[in-house]
Image 1: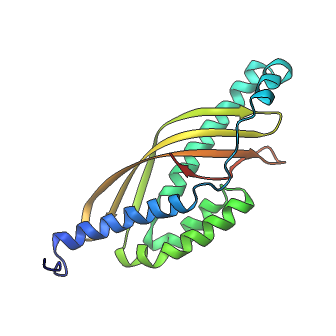
Image 2: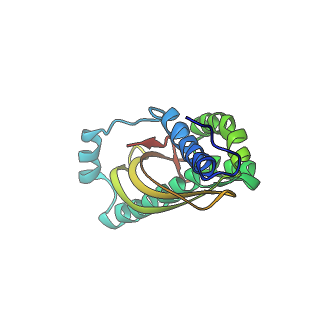
Length: 183
């Protein structure tokens, strides 16, 4: 078996694959962080004594929109603005999860820069798994499509992921992700 020569299509394909793999590794490393068990009794109590249906619908709409954006932010990056992208993304997360994310993503930065990788994600769909307005917790499943490119592969490669995103309502009313778990 021969090694790919610099500039060959095998090298380009490998660079795109490496960038996609970096996303998968970071996501996998974060599995288990911030998992929340659904509390059925609280959900039942929430339905009978909780906020009105319109207030719940408004919260659900907010949670779905936030989770979709957080998944896009988590999986999108540009090697030229990597530090700024990651700092901006960390603001979407609870302090504990932001600390873990920052540490994990810093490890992949040299590889992303070397590959001159750019990943652009879009949220294809999202579904509310749970919403507990009493406890201020929610869980959303988000499906994303990511196009990863580099200078040797300008057409890029597509990757598809689904994430379970647990969210926590903060004192100011904002919903922040406390995990980003691939499912």
